[in-house]
Image 1 (cartoon, one colour):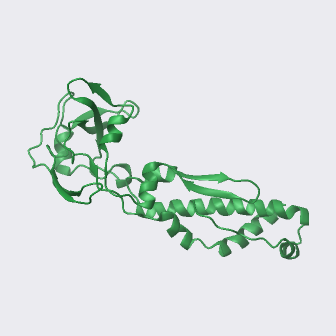
Image 2 (tube, one colour):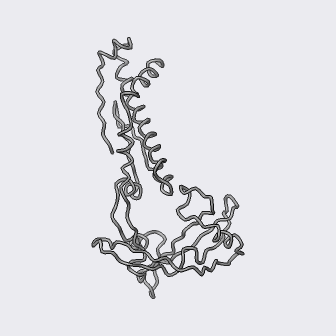
Image 3 (cartoon, helix red, strand yellow):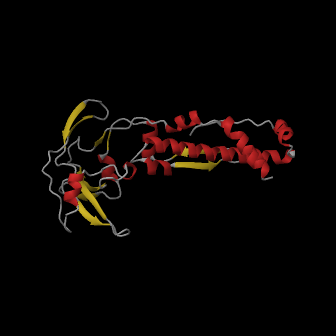
Length: 245
């Protein structure tokens, strides 16, 4: 949460706007709340300029709060949102996936979970999907019959990742291409076709198979604040509030 202090000279305000002195604290309170609202909007606009797949969740995490007389705040909630905002080193997603509500247990393999990945069709906006099919893959996927899965002959992706904690570079090759075993499903609400793949994670998964590369700090709140001109906003807010007295 970013703190900004605004000082009001009630005596000067009364002279400038010819307002009754008992109305000034109320006007000051509404001014703070309006500035808070405008900064929240500026923050969201900054996010729209920089984010794509995480945009919707990030914007929903920007929360305005009335903190009492002449006090208000804007904060960012959500673990993922704050990793996007402040940055985070590489981390292993496996423990969270195996400790969540969807995790299961078997005597043979221990804990396991099946993770669903949705794939957007060509032309899908990046803010709506982080996995967008190529035209070639989509051409095959849309021909899938119910219960059938896409078989890909592409080479699996090999990537170099940083090991959490040590920073040591390690190489990991996925077992299958990203679109392998894709299924076509019908959305029960929109009745439109959707496309998904599924990955299994378990206690016996390769140690490098679920490492997230981490996040580079976006510092969107600081960027929005650096562009937010309170001195320019105040006269407009004052005029609006005094006109409503």
